[in-house]
Image (tube, rainbow, N blue to C red; front, side, top):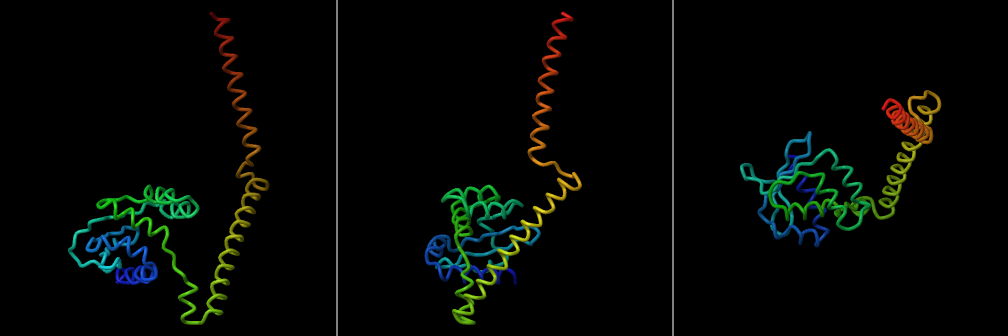
Length: 198
């Protein structure tokens, strides 16, 4: 059930992107198993024309991609990285068993394929309403991000200045510098003491 829904969603994205279908088309017949804990493994087949379908039970996977916990961070870092750097981050966040070329194509697609929500919504609600809905969603996401940053800043100030759970960076650096100076003074004192005793 999940696999059929995933295949349909991927095909919706792929249907609009000929370049993406062209990347997958040479791998028709390959079976890809995706492992994203805690979900059960998902198995998809690459169909003719670069689309996807639910894999038939019993077919062995030619490629297994197992996500590590750092995958989400790699996707976010990859979005701001230069060409090639994003795939590098992804490759380190995924364990690959099987066809490495296909894995590279899939990870590149994962990084570059985007859902155009506004276009899909415009088919149901019209262009103006869809544009406003997407704008409102973006505004809400930006507001939530800003609120989360303000909250984290407030908690940090409270923890540093009010409760002293944390130490401010300048204070920590000053303390570290004092400790390093004390360590150097102690080393010199030990050398002098060793000379006097010798």
